[in-house]
Length: 156
Length: 86
Image (cartoon, each protein chain N blue to C red):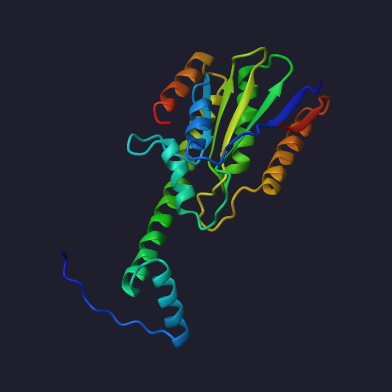
């Protein structure tokens, strides 16, 4: 088994509850971060993701991407959060992202929910091809930082 | 209802045909269709600007998560506060 795995969660992310389900799930975790939303009582983070979809000039079925990064051994929380911030920042210039460090289960792991619709109305949706490029960037980033570790990218 | 004013627009015959087609397809008259686009454009710009501006605030929160001087407990409190807005 690899030291670090990037796993894309496959599921039903096309329906009207997709934002609620993924972002609501991620938000339950111990540590939270992300880019592309304001913390304001007027408009929830879920609402802000949905508005990007409704105002986009592009259409698509998938509303949100959910992926995780798992680690075989227990790492220091700050290191893991650093990886979370770095990965989230890659998306931030075009797509909104909420991430969390999950301490439940055998080992800590990071969850990411990335809006498939950009907050720039004319920017294309986060297609499988574009997402794969982002995930490979994350994989390369981790490979550079942890050259002795094996890092794999999986679609489940 | 507010009193509306007439405005003049210059358009080629082809543009007028296109405008009428699009307005009809959307169940609107010319004026309604033009201003629906203007309003949509305004909402898009406003949302885009708000999200762009939020990146600075997000960067601040994220940097707190990476601050070694802050305890894990304190970082979890930040998450707890953020959770209220999800």
